[in-house]
Structures are given as C-alpha cells and as structure tokens.
Image (tube, rainbow, N blue to C red; front, top):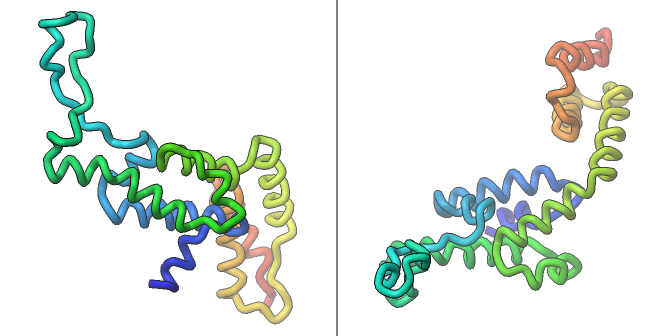
Length: 180
C-alpha cells in the first residue's frame, strides 16, 4: 500500500503521470467518482412537495433532506468527501495551504490543474522546450534501445502529439538509431 501511495503523491515534475494515475484511482473506487471531480458534488433531488401549494414559481426539484437519503444515496453524496480526502493525502505541506479552503473535490482538482499545467505562457514554454528536446533527440552513449524508447515515449507525452504525424515520429526514431 505504501508503494501505491507513493505514485499518488502530487509531483510537479511528473504531473501528467500523476494526473492519469489519480484519475484511474478515483474512477476505480466508484464509477461516479470522476463525475464528482469534473462536475462537483452529487446532489440528490426530490420533487418539491410545496411547489403548487405555496408558490408555483418555486423550483420543481429540491435537494433531498439528509435524513431521507437511502443508504445508496448517502454513499453517492459522500463521494465528494472521499475524493477530497484522497486529494488532500496526495499533497505535501507546501501545497496543502493552496487548497485548504476549497469546498469540493472539484475545486481542489481545478487548483491542482492550474498549478500543474500553469498558465498559457507556461504551457507554451513547456511545449517549446519539449519541441527542442524532440528535435535534438538521439540515442545516448551506452544507452540501451529500451531506455531510449522509454525516454522517447516520455518526450512524446510532453508534446502535443497531434502536432506530429506518425511518420515524423517514426522517422525521428529511425534516424536516431545507430547504424549498428
């Protein structure tokens, strides 16, 4: 379990990997957990019994009182708390203050995405650096083909792969292999 927890710790250097792992982890816990991250807490609604009697302009649906929730509904409503707990545990002491006042798991996730992805200028800088690394990519001295491939795959994940054709990717690898 401790080894698994290590992979879920928020890490700016491996942000893209963390994001994929966290999404998979949250989705595996409950099939609606990712909905909580993308859409916010689940709200259980019921028909407003006082709508017609008191005010026909009042909402047709209202939040169901907690005391009336079924066991399944309580589980669904609690998914936001579970997601918040998981996200809080993924943060070190330096990051926690940045999300402490967030009201929902969605709010926490949004803050972490802004931290990890940066603003538009940072995204552009990261892409420029990744493109430069792609252009300069080659097999390192005493590097195995397997390690080169792993490094190349990481580089591709840093790039917007849609900007590169499969032909460009294949040619880059072939041109950077040793003649032997």
